[in-house]
Length: 89
Image (cartoon, rainbow, N blue to C red):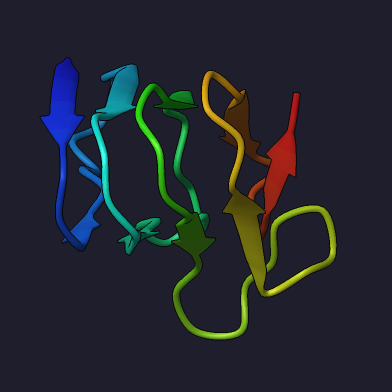
């Protein structure tokens, strides 16, 4: 599932789906779904300019932090769940 986004949004969570988010421009937040029992892979790329904050739900983390920021054009990350939190791969 490829999604072009340019506003604050929540990431999808349908089981068995790999998600790709292409951020076109702007400064906003993408909120990850729960990492608990989530088997999806998420690729997030900042194609435009601006700052993208990736947030988590509840007290979950991304490599130990509550948020992750992409503020450089063409930077990307891949996230998968370890069953309770998000890890960058």
